[in-house]
Image 1 (spheres, rainbow, N blue to C red):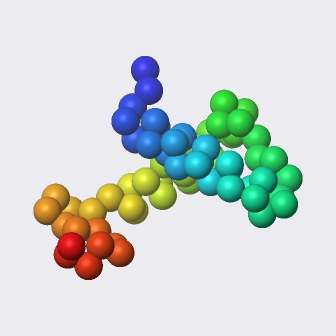
Image 2: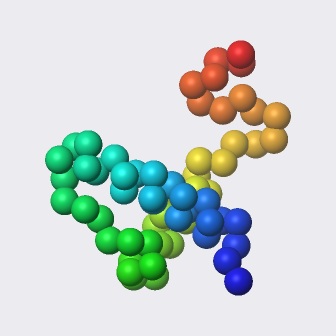
Length: 63
Protein backbone atom coordinates (compact mmCIF):
# COMPACT_ATOMS: atom_id res chain seq x y z
CA UNK A 1 0.00 0.00 0.00
CA UNK A 2 1.44 3.34 -1.05
CA UNK A 3 1.30 6.29 1.27
CA UNK A 4 0.42 9.85 0.38
CA UNK A 5 4.05 10.71 1.16
CA UNK A 6 5.27 8.13 -1.37
CA UNK A 7 2.82 9.33 -4.02
CA UNK A 8 3.87 12.96 -3.50
CA UNK A 9 7.56 12.04 -3.72
CA UNK A 10 6.96 10.08 -6.91
CA UNK A 11 4.99 12.97 -8.43
CA UNK A 12 7.82 15.41 -7.63
CA UNK A 13 10.42 13.00 -9.02
CA UNK A 14 8.44 12.49 -12.25
CA UNK A 15 7.92 16.24 -12.64
CA UNK A 16 11.65 16.89 -12.30
CA UNK A 17 12.43 13.89 -14.52
CA UNK A 18 10.42 15.45 -17.36
CA UNK A 19 12.48 18.64 -17.11
CA UNK A 20 15.70 16.79 -17.94
CA UNK A 21 14.82 16.53 -21.63
CA UNK A 22 14.47 20.31 -21.84
CA UNK A 23 17.90 20.67 -20.26
CA UNK A 24 19.42 18.25 -22.76
CA UNK A 25 20.26 15.80 -19.96
CA UNK A 26 20.11 12.04 -20.18
CA UNK A 27 16.86 10.41 -19.12
CA UNK A 28 16.50 9.48 -15.44
CA UNK A 29 15.42 6.04 -14.31
CA UNK A 30 11.71 5.39 -13.75
CA UNK A 31 10.60 5.67 -10.10
CA UNK A 32 10.02 1.92 -9.91
CA UNK A 33 13.68 1.22 -10.77
CA UNK A 34 15.17 3.54 -8.14
CA UNK A 35 16.89 2.03 -5.10
CA UNK A 36 14.95 2.44 -1.86
CA UNK A 37 17.52 4.88 -0.40
CA UNK A 38 17.08 7.20 -3.39
CA UNK A 39 13.28 7.04 -3.05
CA UNK A 40 13.67 7.94 0.62
CA UNK A 41 15.71 11.03 -0.33
CA UNK A 42 12.83 12.17 -2.55
CA UNK A 43 10.36 11.48 0.28
CA UNK A 44 12.46 13.65 2.59
CA UNK A 45 12.23 16.51 0.06
CA UNK A 46 8.45 16.27 0.39
CA UNK A 47 8.73 16.33 4.19
CA UNK A 48 10.83 19.50 4.02
CA UNK A 49 8.51 21.18 1.53
CA UNK A 50 5.38 20.94 3.64
CA UNK A 51 4.30 24.18 5.27
CA UNK A 52 2.36 24.54 8.51
CA UNK A 53 -1.40 24.77 8.13
CA UNK A 54 -2.46 28.30 7.34
CA UNK A 55 0.93 29.26 5.94
CA UNK A 56 0.92 30.83 2.52
CA UNK A 57 4.13 29.05 1.65
CA UNK A 58 7.13 30.44 -0.21
CA UNK A 59 6.59 32.66 -3.19
CA UNK A 60 2.97 33.58 -2.51
CA UNK A 61 3.70 36.68 -0.43
CA UNK A 62 0.36 36.34 1.35
CA UNK A 63 -1.68 36.88 -1.80
